[in-house]
Amino acid sequence: MSKVKADNANKLAAQIAHFALDKKAENVISLNVKDLTSITDEFVICSSDTNIQVKAIADSIRKNTDHKPIRIEGYEHLNWVLLDYIDVIVHIFRTSERNYYNIEKLWADAPLREFDDEDFVKINSDIK
Picture 1 (cartoon, rainbow, N blue to C red):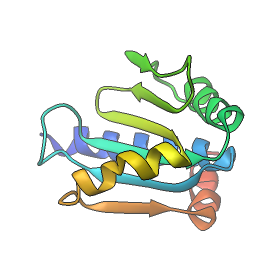
Picture 2: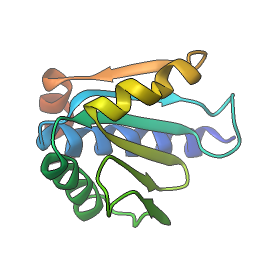
Picture 3: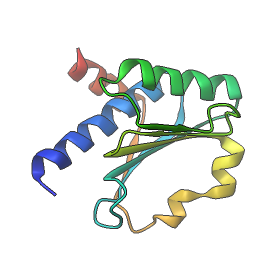
């Protein structure tokens, strides 16, 4: 993979994390899986306690990114919404579903990056 492509995936993951944090997503992380699978470069994973908030997070990401996802799964049930941006796949979970599936454990070999409110402030200033 080229450095440009990796940088673009990294930047898109950070932007997506920003939009998730803006809607009060919890435990926002990204996993760099580019060396572990050919399906994508990064996973962004976050969670929320309510269906309404899961929907708000998904809608914010879809509305504010410059790209349209090629695939959306789970939007009708809002327990686990998947947005596929090719280089970045977003998993938005209800907290109970995230705990049950624990995909972070499945991809434990992937480098993990955590996002929090401090990152939100930094990313927000970088985007503007």
